[in-house]
Image 1 (cartoon, one colour):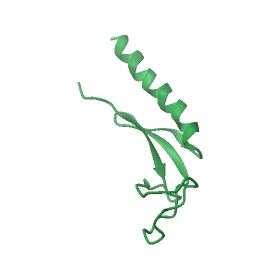
Image 2 (cartoon, rainbow, N blue to C red):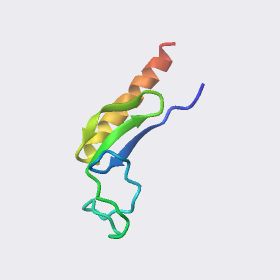
Image 3 (spheres, rainbow, N blue to C red):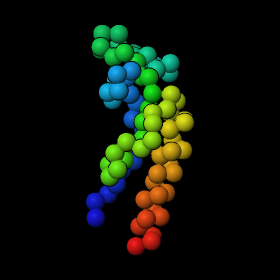
Image 4 (cartoon, rainbow, N blue to C red):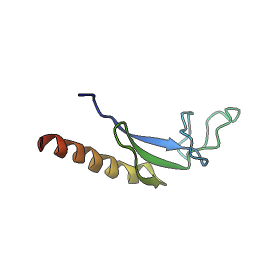
Length: 79
């Protein structure tokens, strides 16, 4: 069975994943990077895809990540 990963991904305003270095405010450290800054965070499961809706703060997405991981663990235990 393949390993399942559940990540919290930072997103630009247009919904693309932001991999740029950012300051604590969410703005890009390098003004020439073309990054518009981080706008939201989504929970992404390698087995299920996007979980729920994006959250404005990372700390709001992390409980959803934990809850979804628990659902996979429960499904494995019930096999």
